Length: 232
Image (tube, rainbow, N blue to C red; front, side, top):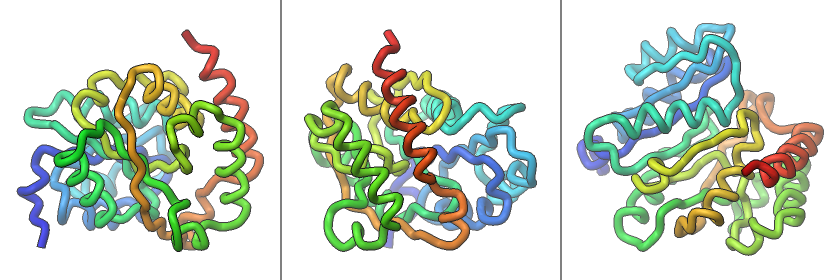
């Protein structure tokens, strides 16, 4: 069995906005394997901050809601400042991501010549689990992004990513909302980070689906991605 001591050099970064019903359970389960977790409470109006404290994770508060991109950047900056931090993982607060997938991704970072690994829902059976509306949105994003296709990515808006110290030190997300995913893809390309994908199993619960991306949000992601490509 994997012990938490084996991942003392790994930090999970969990952006959180109004996830009070589930965040404590999500963090407690993850801490059974990954002892170092920073959760960024992004201006939540519920009891998310209290639940994060109760789970034993590190808590960083945004006084107002700045968006997932900003929360991830805050978490990366916090984690990379911690002694011994070498590997970093962005991990959703709503229970969709699974610890077993993170274990595989971090072990690949340790043993393969790769800087960042992005989870993919489009690598076999997992694809059938993705709701069809979400599947259409995500595949449209890939089709409209030559950079994403050139890098060989099939699910660039998957929130589960693992990366090494080089990526953490160079990461500088400026798009505060969901379009941070397109910005990360741009950084992979521009900075020459060695990238790979890892098939992951996403848990689509009734709760997580209620927090998911709609078609309108998908259109917003595309529009924000165009803006991101114009940033210097």
